Every structure is written in structure tokens, then in C-alpha cells.
Image (tube, rainbow, N blue to C red; front, side, top):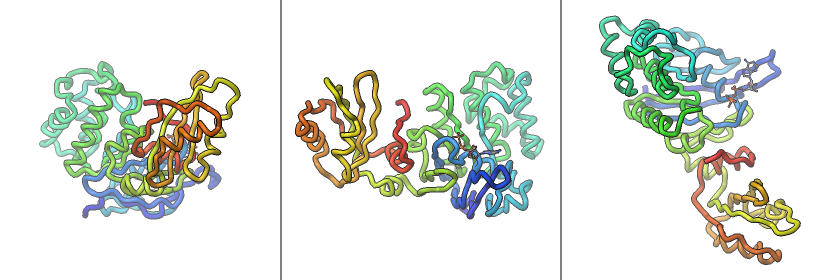
Length: 324
Ligand SMILES: Nc1ncnc2c1ncn2[C@@H]1O[C@H](COP(=O)(O)OP(=O)(O)OP(=O)(O)O)[C@@H](O)[C@H]1O
């Protein structure tokens, strides 16, 4: 069995059927694979994670964890699942790291004779072996987040569900978490990862599913997503007008050639053009468009390869980039 998670036509409604949070979602995570689930706020990511963890039942459809029917036999399926929702809660704050891990090991059904060995291996894997006797409320946020992962791995689950595992972490701690996620996948754990950071998903995921209003718009490898978004290259530049200027006109110049996204910082406009033309001298196209409209051409035109964030913005038609 290489498929650790399988969703077939899964839907979930709330408010007596008035809210369709997840609609007809089918996806698969194989052994050692990382599937990145991306979508704007309210797209349905957490609802999917909760259903996969058996915390929430689907309104219709099937969920299988390692071939076990998680809708009909949730208790049986739970043994194969590690869930990381993260945050500051989820532990007994005034108990030590070891006491917490022992408690959760018992809940995860880890046999008593293997308990201490498994706990020390997991604490080592998340670099918390020196913190066993610290109280959980003495740990930093990043250490708590690593402890969440160690707890989720008790009982050797074959599926790890990570909902925003690096949210609110300092960049260096987020890097450590990403390394850990990679290590887990290299050990054969299948991972479903939700994240608002497209950079993180791009870096970690073997496959990506783009969720929009509860529906999967596209899923596949990164190249499949780029192809679907129909973007060949991305150009960025800025322009500070000296007189009256409508940024919409830039979108009009490139209509049919690319999608233009813009935002203002002070009196300067920052543009991004998601080109859907095949290879062309994009910089030249921008320069001549400005000049033929009697404007000074931007001097900071930069054309680069497409990123997941570009593709996501194009697919979801949202015009705001996350801060670098
Ligand atoms: N318990 C609930 N009762 C009613 N509606 C809910 C419930 N949980 C989620 N929803 C609705 O379902 C939709 C999907 O929510 P969900 O939390 O899954 O989105 P999300 O993609 O995880 O969002 P975010 O990125 O903000 O965490 C939203 O419209 C939300 O308001």
C-alpha cells in the first residue's frame, strides 16, 4: 500500500447545508510524498485537515488512511495519523516535556516497553533531547512547535497532517521546521501540508493542490500548476509618475499578453506582469509601451522564472503578494 491518504469525492457542509466548505475533493498522498494544500482564507484547508484527522466527518465521500475507511472506522484509522495544528496549546504547560510525551505516548498506544526509547528518539529528531526536564511553558514558540511534531510522531504514524506548521515562527526556526518535515518525508511518512507561505510549499511539496471556495481548481506537480496558470515568465518594475497617471492603463497595454498586478507604496507604483506569451523580449515590450505613451521607461525591469505565488495569484485572481 503506497497510498497513505486517499480522499474520494469528499464534501463538507455547515449551517444545515447553507455553507459548502469543501466540495467534491479527491486527492491522494503516497508514502514519502508531501502534498501542499494552498488556498486563500476560508478556502477549506482546515476543514480538509480536520476531516483527514477524523475530528470532523464529511457530509459525503470516502476517506481512506492506509486503506482503512476513516469515515466508518475512525478509531482504527487514528493510529496511523499524526496531527499538528500547532500554537501554544495542546500540552500540559506546567508538566515537563517528558511527562507530556509519556502521556501522549500512552494515548497513541505506544507499548510501555518501547515508550522511553521512542520518546528519546523523537526528542532527538526534533533537537529537544536536552529539554526533557523543562516545563512546557518554559519552551520558546519554536521549541513548542517542534514538540508538536514529536508528539504527532508518537506511535510511528504513516500520515502527518501539518496545518500551518511554521506560522508565527522566526525565519530561522521556520527553516529548522522545514528541514524536519523533509527528514520525515525521506523516512517514508506521507505529509499533507497547509501553508499560507507559497515559498514554503514550493520548497517542500512534491505535489500541490490549489483550493478555491472549497473546490480543487488544479492539482499536480509544480510544473503542472504553472502550465495550468498559463504563465511563461514574470516581470516586475516600478514607476513614479510625475503627473496624472492611471495604473490600469498598464493592464490595458498588455491586455491579451499578460495579467498585470499593481500596488502603490507612497507615490511609486509597483507592477508585476504575469506573461502568458511564450518567449519574447519582455523587457523591451515594457520599455516601448511606456515610451510610446510619452512616459519615461522604468529602469528596474526584472524578468524571472514563474513562482508558485505567481501561479496562485493568477489562478485565484488575487492581486496581493505576501511580503518577502
Ligand atoms: N464549524 C464551522 N461552522 C460553520 N462554518 C464553518 C465551520 N468551520 C469552517 N466553516 C466555514 O467553512 C469555510 C472553510 O473554512 P476553513 O477554516 O476550512 O478555511 P481555511 O482555508 O482553513 O481558512 P484559513 O486560511 O483562514 O484558515 C469558511 O467559509 C468557514 O467560514
